[in-house]
Image 1 (cartoon, rainbow, N blue to C red):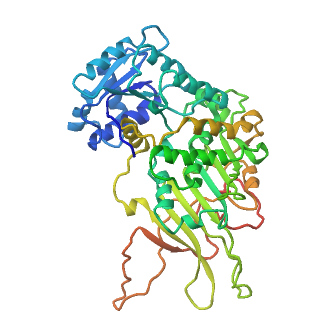
Image 2 (image 1 turned 180 degrees about the vertical axis):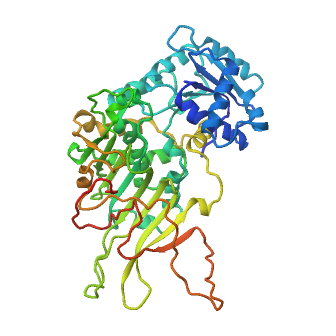
Image 3 (image 1 turned 180 degrees about the horizontal axis):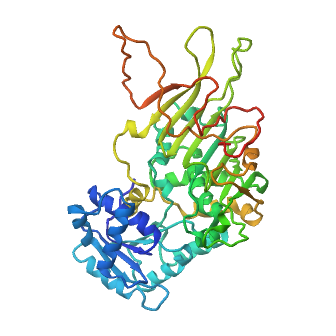
Length: 527
């Protein structure tokens, strides 16, 4: 990964907003506690409020106390608080950034001159902010982080890119999608390209279909005004789900150079067929219209399921099923690759139940890890097959605190590394793929909170079934031969479990994508 000149100051526009309080200030404080934030980096908050330095420090301390992982106290806080400064700023007024410019020059005396601007503002304000930075001369030599969604559709994304490039070169722009900062998303690349086992079977010859689920059990959390303008398709699919898909489907890059990696991500998106509204399901949870800021007759979707086809040599004929929504049965983000059936069943006539498809599940959050589900012989007389899983668990394999996604991405932006950020062409192609759904959206179906969305989502994936790994189930390792004292030998690899499930049972919340027989869809099950 390429490292460029460090920054001397971080400026957060929208310093009093929800994103700053929930994510950015706790992330910066944790980087400071861990010794990862350079000592001379100043943090300037900027918004229209007359807050002052002490007011901003009080806001930051309350935010860290409520949303952070480390207490805002003791020597750690005493070392962090002096970094925090504040300047009233309005990029919609003439000379609205004059005070910010003076505060920046004060903060940069004797330190690095590079600046990182973070636009934690509503996306509609991005163009005005960029224009103001250009007019006040603050843009040269700086970098800017722009939050998602980047535009509302293809036309507005192109218009916003043009406005940004009037002031900033593409090398200065960091379009952020925090899912790219998750360790388990990045581990998709490690799993594929650092192991000889998986890549040879990561293609249409061995895989039947791929599922990507990002499920939330919360609602819109008081963000009615935002969600009414955005919806689930723009908020989640155009960003998180399509970006995870690129990591799953991309070809091996020539190197881990940021542009080589991003080249391959864009090639996947260019190979993807634009969405067919007939192969998509929109839903809205019951009670959404009662939320603050939501229109009583709102048709905004809070759930999306769709099928996507990638037309290239590796993936032709392998459907990708994407699913995301709010107020679902539980919080879970994962990728499941479902393998084809065995070409010939040698157990036919041996009173063995129908063979089930193997599948590999990458658990992004929670319960981060990887599970390979296979068929295995049950212990005992006769020959009966059972379902077994081999599990890799992040927490057990690497007993260390993971960096939060925003912590990692802030570090990468400070160092000028674009690897995990979105490039202009990737953003525009993602909007192009979804354009048919924006122009002619499918009907919005109601679904009960706590379910897995409209039953039409089950019909979309039929004859297969949606999969979710059983959350929080205890490991039940396959019985091993006992030694002379009755003790079982300890595994030399405690992060790998071999779990032989009982016949006819399934962990709560888990479904079987490898079962292909007809079924009756039920609300409340996981597909």
